[in-house]
Length: 125
Image (cartoon, rainbow, N blue to C red):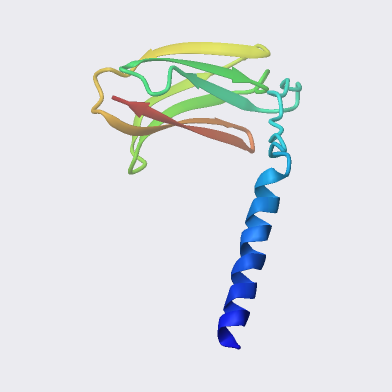
């Protein structure tokens, strides 16, 4: 009796495999990626490029207009290695920094203004 049960199980399993392989293949649903959002005038944003960098870095700042703003570059342990105070920002501000004299590694770009703070990672190689 156990041979018949085993035989029945194998026939059923084989039938299911054959049936499944003969079904049309359906593609997995596509993952939707959201398009980059436009920055509204109230949204604070920093774009750091190129990242990773060999030293020369462009920092684009939006949303901090009309405020006294502090731009800082911090190393991985939080020590400030570069500091600049910027006054009277336009809607969009870009600064180019040469950080090639610093050691390779992870750094943070931080913008502070009033009660707002935004930070981005930067890798120098």
